[in-house]
Length: 209
Image (cartoon, rainbow, N blue to C red):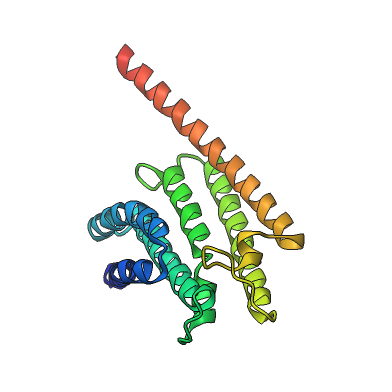
């Protein structure tokens, strides 16, 4: 059921990508979303269907959904706020545009949990909990900043169709965003280094046996 829901959402948002990119003239953003999102969606569907207990499949699917939905939101917002077309749901599109950042962080989580979706030690599990806590803080900060930007008059939209307050952060949101991204990057690098060392040790043991 979950695979059908997320896969269907990914397919629908992907189907909307080309027409929205053409209407808004933002083809470059659409190409990036498609190039990254389609492989993520395909791998996610296969893994989630065959190994539903493995979180990697679900993370791949969520990453694809975030990228497609965010791209659609940005293109639609550009169509409304930059090109001046009076169609409904403009604020909703602006709210969806920052979701791309959430998708990229989820993709980092895929790297951290590769290849079997399991963590080898208690320290790794605590580090992953810290990673998710940082991620939750980033999402909460983005939601608060987005709500504040949408409540402002006039709503400021940048050249890509996103909220200026999100794409060019200032004040408290800039501080929180930078801090959480740095913490997330440090945790991710720690995980990657641990993976590399464990693979090298495994390779060395295999060579000696």
